[in-house]
Length: 564
Image (tube, rainbow, N blue to C red; front, side, top):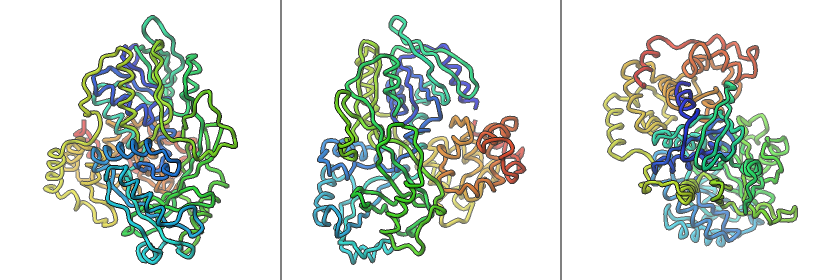
C-alpha cells in the first residue's frame, strides 16, 4: 500500500501536463506513451486498473480474422500490424498459437472458401505468423479427437497470438511502464468533477478506499473511461462525432477440454453462425464469447448465457461427459464499447454483430480533452501513439518517440537472468512437470524485477515455495506484488494481478489456509482481517481455514526486504 500512498501524495495538489481518466487498456497505454515521451502524467481509475472491460477479454492478440466477413480490410491490416509488433515486443508474454476451426457441412462457408480467407488473412498480416492449413475431416479426427466430426465437412488452421497470463496483468504492465517513466498513478481514485480555470483543468478527486477528497490540475485531460466516455463528455458539455453502444460478451472457465499436447484454440460456428472459441488456459479451458446488445454497461452472466454456451460446446465436442453448469469454475462478463456516429442510428433491425470494432480518437482543442472511443487489447500500441499525437497537437511538447514505453527488457538482460537462475538451480526447486519452469514464469511476469526475487530465494529458500497450493503462486511473488503492484484490495491480486480466481474453484479458495498469509503479506498484519472480510463479504463469512491459517515467518519477512 506504500506505493499507492506515495502516488496519491504526488497527485494531491499536483500540476500535470495530462490527467488520464480510466485505467483500462486505453488509459494505461495513453499514460505509458505520454510519460515515455516526457510528459508529466497523472493516471486515475475509480476502481482497480483493468477492473472493467479490460479484464473480460478473450486473452487473444489477433488481427481479427472474423472481421473479414464484413470486408473491414483496413481494420484487419491495422490489427495485424499491432499484433505483429506486440508479439515481437513481448516474446515471453505472447505466444503464437493455432486457431483450429472445424466447419460444419451446413455452416456459412465451405472449407475451401474459408481457407482462401485464411491465406488472405496471412497475407494481410504481412506473413507475421506461420502459414495456414486446409484440414480434411480425417485429419481433424487424427489431430484433435476431442472434436465431434460427425457433421464436419473439413476445416482450417490459421495463426494468431495468445496472452500466456491474463489480460488484466498485461494492462498493468503498461501501468508499470508509465510509473517507471514518472507517471503518478493511483487506483480507487474517482473523478468527482472537473472545471476549466484559465488554461488548466482543476479536478476534484476522491479516494474511494479512504474517502479522502483531494484536488489536482492538468493542462489537458485524456478521457479513457471505456464504456463511460460519453458520461464524462456529457458532464463537460462536449460535443463529439462519435458515441458508444454496448455489446455484452461472456466467457466460461471449465476444466481442460483438450489434452496438453493438443495446445491450440478450437473455433466453431454457433447456431447463430457466429464464431466462438475454446481457448487453453493452463489446466483450464475458456469458452466464449457471445455478442448480445445491452443498454447498460454493467452486466452479468445469466443462466440463459450459460445454457447457450454449454449447449453449443456439447454439440460440437466429443466429451466423455457433457458439460453442465456445475463444471463452470469462473464466469467472465463484460461489454465491448462499440463506436457509432453520434448522428447515426443503431436501430434494432441493424445486424448488431456487424458493427465495426475499430476505435476512434477525438480531440476538443478548445477544452483540451482527448477522448478514446472503443479500442481492443491488440490495438493498444496504435491507441497510445494516436493519443500522444493528439496531446502534442494541443501545444504540449513531447520528446521523440523512441518506442521505449512498451516491450520487455533487452535480450542481454534476459540472458543474464536465465544464467543466474540456472546457476542457482531455480527450476529444480519443485518437481511439477505439468507446470512451466519457474525461470520462465518469473521472467515473463516481472522482467528486471525478477533479479531481486532470485536474491530473496537465495537468502530464504521458503520464498520459492507455493503459498496457496493449487493457485501456483510463490511466496516471493506475493512480496513483490505488495511492493510494486499497487494491490489495494484482495480481489485486485486474486483476479487481476494473478488469475487465481479464474482457475481455482471457490471451494478451493475458501479451503486454502495460505490465503491468510497472502493477506498479511499484501496488507500487513493490522489490515489483513479487514481485507479478508471485504473479500468474502463480511467478517463472519471468512472461512475458518482462512481465518486460522498460518502467518508469515520472520525469515520470509526479512527475505522480503531484499526486494525493496
